[in-house]
Length: 218
Image (cartoon, rainbow, N blue to C red; front, side, top):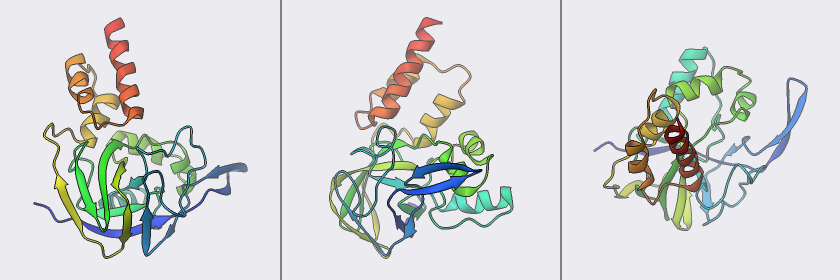
């Protein structure tokens, strides 16, 4: 059983930024914090700029595995700042291939459930001043993922991470990413198996339903 630990906690409100002379507003710029007060719909002092595509009760806590930082720093020969991917929680020992949709963790006082992988957008490029990053994230599946909140509470940097429930279907975040982005001939049966996991969030459910329709119409 691998041991998980918190490396960083981060939160932040949307702010105005400029990238290549183009202004944009985003909540991706977060500051390190000693604690997060996690509610059912958002973290205190943490908001998204575009609620149509971000946030909501299925995507309260954004997670990005700490191990990926070393990978990207090596690939791009650069030093990344904490919360470089706009995440709230940067843990070690909880990569996308190590967690299943529907897994439940207690982190500090909060009880959290893995709801979906992150569908990354180009704001990650802007945040890190790197036009290649989004493409490489999609290639590797190093996307991060989200928790929904089952019990509200406080998380501190020294909070323990305890796994309370391992989902019996054992469908990892990374396997869904591969199915959607990289499987050359995805099958309806495999898609249906993922869709049978009730805990999968609506955003990814809709992506997979659309993929299923495309397959059936071909």
